[in-house]
Image (cartoon, rainbow, N blue to C red; front, side, top):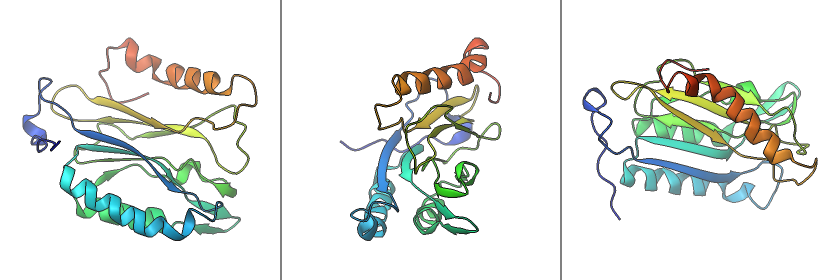
Length: 189
């Protein structure tokens, strides 16, 4: 089904639909069967996004990897440039979740409308993942009146430690509680 074009930012109101996409791009540097096709898949996704005309795009597994002083950011750089060319000039910065050794959270938010406050990146306190820094990103996007609060995350794929996904869900809820308490208004946590 064809998506309607997004409304102009200055005319958006709460009665209009927001068109968004949440997508796992599968760009994992440490799993070699994903790596060779990453660029081709990202190019295909950019093409699909250009035709669908989303307002906001939430991305998972667009990893950066670091080995001490060396960082590999090719997939993110390619996708970020492509998204900017499509008008998604408001983007979260994935670098805060980049560990000294390993992969970052792989999370990004791309928006055509501006952020109403600086987005925040959070690391999960509990995780069974050894090579990826799990967490979530929160961004408040200005679409007319009150900001729209968006969160993207990728929960732990492991079952240990016990209750890890529940713990991660609780951490997101706790971080967003101040926003929810004031009815969603304001800039961010």
